[in-house]
Image 1 (tube, rainbow, N blue to C red):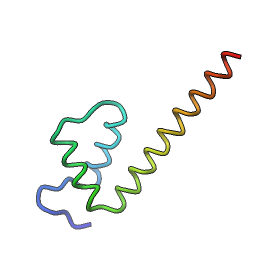
Image 2 (cartoon, rainbow, N blue to C red):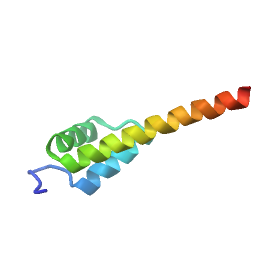
Image 3 (cartoon, one colour):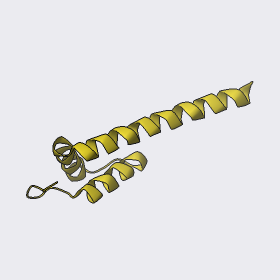
Length: 70
């Protein structure tokens, strides 16, 4: 994809998505990521996959903790 002026690359955007899983982003990084996701279909798909994996991992942890309690 051709980048607009000031837009982060897909590599930079994916690094921000990974970092977002571990810690909150500053306002500039949040804005840059939101802008990139509005314009990039591939990164939107990757972000959706990351969110799906995160939700699945959280549910698995809850399930495994419940098994340990029984």
